[in-house]
Image (cartoon, rainbow over all chains, first blue to last red; front, side):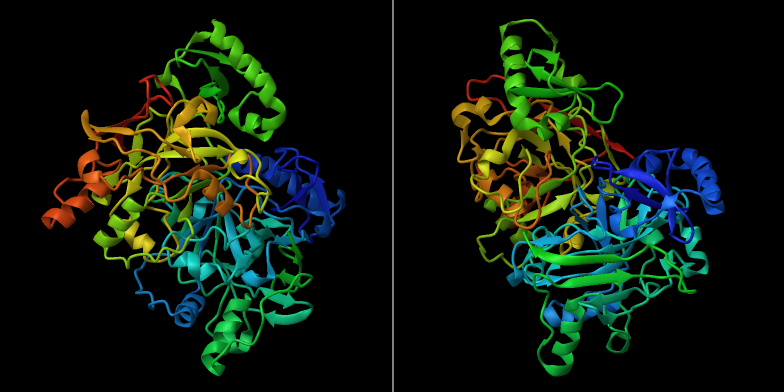
Length: 320
Length: 320
């Protein structure tokens, strides 16, 4: 199934099913919002499946991804991992952090979740001096998951999404050194317009990872296309980690962290900080600047056959 | 004004006004839930004030604090500070963290907020081996606060609350060393039954701090009574810090961190970790164990004249 949320004046918007080619949509009858669908996921899925099958036969209205909200415009919980070791190792080296001992534990912080920006919403930032950066990620949205999980963690993953995790890089190491994680360095994220069930990914949903490249463009120029498969921990591991001492509320969003491949010198990066890190190691200093007001980032992951999947995030940075 | 939330089968419960002596209550007419009241705070306050004034004249039903939910049973955002330097300095010394440079920046992490446990709810924990600990705190609940605040941050504080921030101490330093903050080490918090507007504190609301002792008992024995005034940053500073790069959604809860005084050897502590830290420094090793299943913690802050204020938190630790 594919889901999008269109604005209706309410904070949660109106849930729509989207056709398999992302061109048509129809209001979901079984649930008014994605949050409601997630709260009753197992019971509501057959009805939603039937609505989706009917939509794929034809009908509905044209789907305009640029008019969509985030599929889940607000969530009770957003837990972001950092599962790509090539990114973490590089950041540790550049910021002079002690190289992390491999503990066998995923890295994860809790971020602001009372809003996920629409895929085409401007990103309001307090200052260019803070080192404004994007982070292209994949994520999953969970149905209810009890503390300790019980059984397969992957079975608690309802949806896969694509996320832009906005970051303020001058503040990030300052907050990280406290050990408390990030508050000021992590403004609200955005989500690509279409949330998909894992089966929509076909063979590209592999080991609870997205085995597809995430194409990132900055001001119209290609910036990177790292593949989502190279996570040291799959999303199932991240779900299990998150649920150790808490029940995961339906609609919990869990992120992969910036998509990164060890071939980043060839394949590029999904955030500016990584490119600056490579420059620092290779050339002694970073030369790529962070973003300026008016800059645009575009992120899109398409299926292996080139067909639309999550739709595109396309955001411009503006002064708050 | 004083508010409590009584169970009605819904996740947000039913908002009640509580009389000034905490003995009687009445369903709020101007808002069905505390979240709704906070979303319309400035517009709804006069009506709520009138209802509160009438209740203080008499009437209503008996208020049973033990039957109450958390005043805000779930919140879109929970940001916990660590504003008592006597606690932070001690923890740094004991855990061998480099003593934090005084940066002029408050410490703050984001924690699980999709539920705040009722004041008398059992605290479900995965294992006694994790070092189960309580943390007695004060907190504030904000009305809508725009990014950058504009004007007085204290004016965005709607309510003052008392919180028990459950912590798993064996996991806390492991997660802290990653720089990402805490996930597994911080299960859901609980809230004392009554949320009060700052004016209810009278002179004890001083410099956006609670100038009253928080009395903590563990299994019926006095454990500590540190005063809430000794914060290096007031709640207004914490609000401003939190709102640097995000709008604060109505109902954002901001915590003080464990209440702690530099006189902790005399006055005691609001968490076990602090007492163990003192023992480690003074005697070479911690001898006070963490909590066992079946243990009870009780926390209460009363007004200077001994009258009830937030009501008591009284929780038993149970196996999940």
